[in-house]
Image 1: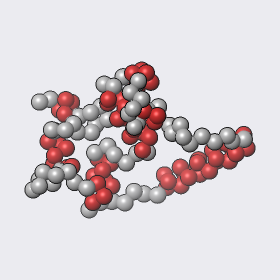
Image 2 (image 1 turned 45 degrees about the horizontal axis):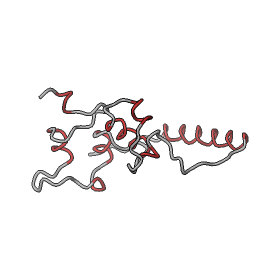
Image 3 (image 1 turned 135 degrees about the vertical axis):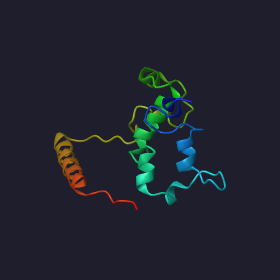
Image 4 (image 1 turned 120 degrees about the horizontal axis):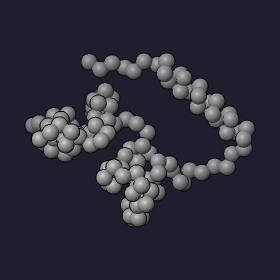
Length: 124
């Protein structure tokens, strides 16, 4: 089977691919590994570790065969991801003044800059 058919568009291995079984499953039991017992480097190599809303959005894209327009038009309102399919949390809304928005922008920029300066731990 061709390599690109074994991977989702985001690079994650599809079920049945050798990479998924080699990394995500215990070869002795055949049971999926507990992600709490895996190091962050392995999880990131599998394409995990981003913000949860991005993961939900990616799932919706895969459900709709990669078609962004179909994600927007999704009518499966019973799906638990449906309210989050646009990559935001509709239940977390706040009315902010322009000063509050500017203060939050500054704090976010500072936090992002600080995060860039912290090296990621190396796995052994």
